[in-house]
Every structure is written in structure tokens, then in C-alpha cells.
Image (cartoon, rainbow, N blue to C red; front, side, top):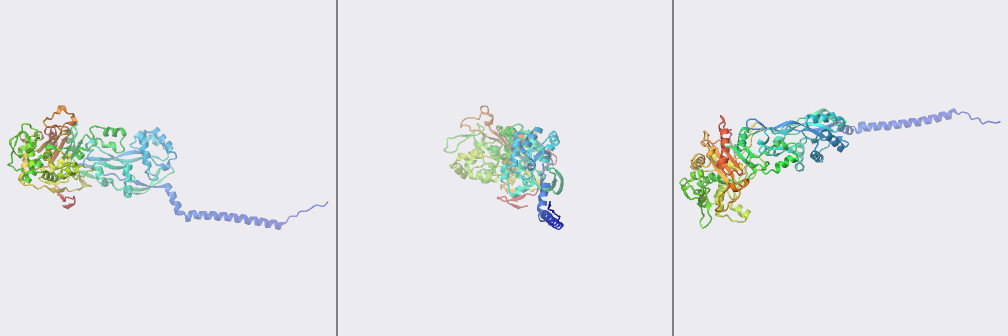
Length: 632
């Protein structure tokens, strides 16, 4: 039996093994080469790129909001402060399920529908990895609940920030104003520079000085590089560039005088403006009713805003700056000065006042407020003291609207005063051209009779009347009214807009007439000087709200309260060296001498009874008619 014998071939096996080993080594070397190449590509070629991406996951650049500049009154009392507040914020990139996170937060803290709605609006204009506020002003209990549940809320943080606070609440709401959250409309109008400056800042000045001095109060934003963990929590600050705080403003306003003026006005609707005769600085600026500006700082609720906006008393309306009212007889001192300067009247001019006035060839009768008249020989001093309408009607007829418009313009009526507050209204003092353009009608003599008494088309703001009064008190020096006295301690000099030229004896006569308003037997403003140990010069005014038919008498009882006449009073003191000028408006108060004059008296008493209270005596800066500064 034959068997096939298979013998081993060592040489073949050795060759096969060697070939397999070489292939294996080649594969291993190739794989190692690929791995080394990949390592080289990652660690050398793209090192900078991947390191940057890694750092972006670990290190964030965050803006640091500047501290908003503080606002003080003239005595250093804080009117606008910054106080710490705790805000609940969300970084969208750190949150997996936003709706679930909002639902969970809603079970931990109070969360209104409006909070969520505003949060979603802010989300639309956020920057990557920017914390978006959800709730402001968390309580300590709410902060504790969020902290305990931190592990369940990735991307949610409680951040401390400084928010605006107004310690005097409603007392300075219409002058200092308030800040509020930046709206979509405001953001849409931002330039690239504005976007940079407001990074990290949620608020912007909305009204008042907060708005007009926004650029100074805002400050400059800072930055910091922070290291975060996987949940976005800040572990440490790697680098920081400190922000520059906003400038501090010191105002001419006096808190005590503001309180006195507000209390004197009481619960009545109206305005009080007091101006330093020597500088144009605004010492008191009251508009009532007012409101609490703190409601607006972090976003006012719907109910609170509706209560303010729907109120018949319109507390959000700045009567001192934007209220345009017929100034009534408060214009008579200015008109008397203009008549003297134009040669229409003089110190010896006397008229007979039977209680009415009739234009030549006109059957209409214009009745004086005193139906039986003021006498047979009424001069300017008596006409001012007793507010004789017939005297000024006669002067207006012999004058013309062009002359009246000119003197009104020189005292700042019919144009903005230039005060450092936004949205001022200009009022109106009509001219022939204005009536032809606005009404398509010529100027009639009867229009002049209305204009000289501050009625008809004439409108003025309480601020304009205060500036007019201060210009009279300074014998023609017309200052630009100023709210801010100093910026970061650097005093702003007064600005003289122009001088109203008149002969000294003309000023003397007007002063004498205004003093007689307060101190003569039949003066209409006696309550303005009652019990004071210095002399006051003033002029009362009453402005019609609704028309009264010819031949009918004004019947207060037959009119609704809001249809009754407005009460006005302008005054300055002391007569021998005027320091302060005041205008008072009481809506529907009827009698200027009875209702408005006592308010002015309280302001004078408080200001001039203080020991050593004088004007700053700063050197004025004269400006031309275009508003450009000429000289110091």
C-alpha cells in the first residue's frame, strides 16, 4: 500500500512568514504614518484655529456696563442714584429646551406673560452667548430658589446689576426724567458706534435730563475675558478693561424750593417755574400732577401705564415745558415796556376807562373785566396795578401787531427758550404773515386787541413766562435757561442770548407798575407779598378756556371745573435787587391774584429767607442770534 508523503518545506514557510510580516509591518507603519500626519495636521498646521475654537468654548468676552452718572441738586442732594438689583437671565446657547426651561422657571419664581413676551423680543436682537434678561428685581427668596435648582437650569443665571433709582420719586419726574429699557425702535436707529457703546447696557434716557444728557451720563463700556465651565458658569476672570463711569451732573434745581413750590400748588393741576435772575439757572421746575419715574426703569407694567396714560389729569404731560396756555394779562408789563420804547405811550399818557372799549367804525363792544371801569385818568402804573384792559386796548389800536410781535420775540415768546431739556414747545405769538399762512386771513384790529392781552392766538409755556419775567427783572438781559449747573464739578457759565434795549426810566415805570400790583390799594396780586420783609413785583393773569358770548358775564358756577379760566401769576423779588423770578399756572384756578399769587409768595419766602442765599455770580457767555458762543 502506497502512501503519499507530504514533507515540510522550511524554506517556503519561512518565505511566506516573512512576506506576511512585511505586509503587517507595512500596514502598521502606514497606519502610524497616517496617525502622525493627522496629529501633525491637528497640532501644528491647524493649531491656532483649533485653539481659538477651544477657547471660544471655554473663554468668553463679556461687555462690562459702565456706571451711569449721578445727578445732584445744587446742594449735593442725590436726585438720580444707581442701586443694585438682581436679574434672572438666560444664555440661549446653553439651553437645550427653552420652553421647558421657561416652564420650570415659572414654577420657581413669579413669571408673568409680559415677562416672557418681552424676553422673546429681546432674544431677537441679542448677540451670541449674551445673557438675555427674563425677570428684573428678584427678591432674596426668589434668588434662593433659583440657586437651589441651579443644576436643573443650565444656561440660567442670576446677575447683579446697577439700576437707576430716583429717591425723590415724583418730585423731579418732569425735570430729571427717567431711563427705560432700550426699545426695538431705538435699537433700529442705532449706529455701529451706538451698538458698541450700549453693549452690556439695557437702559437709555427716555425723558428729561436723562435723555438730553444721555451721552455724558452713559459712560464708556468696558470688557472682560472670563473662563466658563461646560454649563456656562463663570470660573474666573482672565483679563479686564474697566468701564469709564458716566459724568456727574449738578443742577441749579434746589430740592427744598422744589418741595415748597410743589406743596404750595397742592393737588391742583398746574406748573411752577423759578429762575435765578442773575444766571438763568432754573431753581424750581414743577409740573403737577406728577408720577413715580421708578416705575419705568426696568419696564412699566401694563396696568400701571394704563392708569397713567388714561388719567384725565394727564400726569405724564410736562405742563411747565410743553403746556401751551393763553398767558392773559401777564403780558401787560412786557407790552407796556414795548409801548414806551416805541413811543406809543409815555409816563403822562392817560385814558378814560368807562368799562368798555369800541374800535372806530366797529359796533362791537370790548368789555373790561371791571364792568364800571377804572377811572377817567388811568396811566400805565394804574393800568398794570389794576390790570386795566381798556388802557392796553387803546395802546394796541394806536400801535400795530408788528411792534407787538417784535417786543414779544425779544422776550422769547413764540420760540423755544433753548433750555437743556428735550421736546420743548415753542408757544405762539402771531404775526400778519403767520395768520395769512395759517388761517388764510388778513390781520384785523380786533386781533391786536386780543394779542395785547395774551388772548386770541397767543400761547406761551410757563417756562417762557418765567424767562420773560427774569428778563424784565434783569432790565433786559435775556439768559438761556439752564437746568445743569456743573458737569463733573466743572461749572457751566451762563449764556446771554441778547439784551432788550429800553431807557432806564421806562424800566423804572414798569417796575413801579408791577410793584403796585402787589402793594397798591386796588392791586390784583396783594397775596404775593403778604407778610414778607422784602418787596415783590408781579402781575396776575386770567386766561379764558372757553369763549364767552358778547354781552354775557363769566359765571363760574355754570361752567364745568375744567372749563373755568386758568389762573396765572408772574413775579420777581426783591424789587431793589431782583434775585429770583417766578411764573405760576393753575389750570382752571380762575383768579391769578387769588390762587396763583400765594404760590409765588411761598417760593419767594423760602428762597429769600435763607441766610446768604445769592446767585452764583458767574461770568456770562454772550451768544449770537444763531446760538453760537461769542465771548466769555
